[in-house]
Image 1 (cartoon, helix red, strand yellow):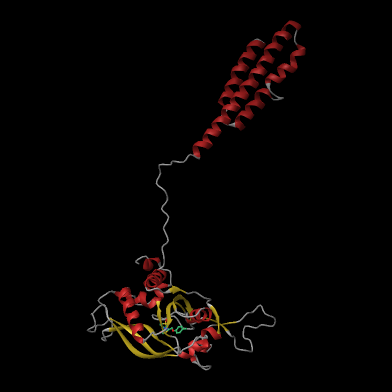
Image 2: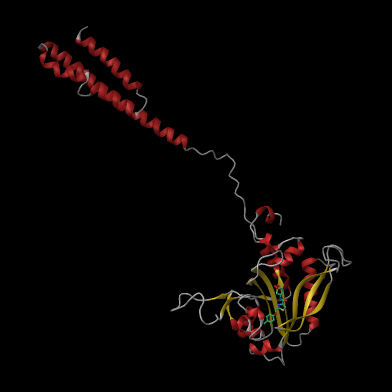
Length: 355
Ligand code: 2U9
């Protein structure tokens, strides 16, 4: 075989290896094999000096052409592989916009807030306004202004969560003095603040979270939601209170329901009453649901004690009023026949999703 034939055979092998390189590392291996220092082509070029002059020119020309052709073929293959790699990347990242989207479960309002809003709307329809205030309160607004005697049991540390500011100099968790700061035990202090800030007429509702040192059981929670209301005006009587609450209870539970007012005692109202609604299961004749009485207790109320008006700078000779309070969780439990109000706050979606 002549050198020219050998170069022709090398050309075919080299071009085939370059064209057959499947990726960039394989292409680099082909470059080393056919253009590298130890390649046949390099030794041919190095050996040119030993050839006769006429052969040297011909072989030199062919070998240099072959080197140029290998280099060009390498460049072309490299570009083709890079293009293929880019296409593969694009292909793998392609989005099928016709695929259905991932379903994301939607959150909804909690039943407690839904009932709070529903009852609030009934009062807004009667002209009441929303009053809000702090959940961390002081003794005056939570107890003293509301006519609680200094030794009233609700003030005890076993009924009320007291709060201490531990960032203060020398403060200890069990400080020597009783704390004046507490978690509000009802939303009544919001109404005390309203009366301090504005003169009657006042018609407000104050829904919100309240805190009592109770152990959770089917009918108690250490944190629950209250809806309280207050009306202070000239000439308000117990008849206004009865008419208002009878209307609201029928709006909440249904027009066919009736109400009953039983005498009761609260420190902040006089006279005071507890309000029952006729049983929705038996219509008032007596059944297991109402424990045979035909009635279910739903809220407390009364005429605001004159002492409370005096405590907030309002003249009780000119103004009178009524107040009421109900537990939102209790309303929810009655309306949906729940055996245990703890279900409302445990976050079990199988239960909450029903409403
Ligand atoms: C002012 C004056 C009087 C608010 C009232 C009740 C009766 C009542 C309970 C219902 C169930 C608390 O959630 S519960 O445990 N509340 O029975 N609350 S009168 O009386 C006020 C409020 C503010 C200035």
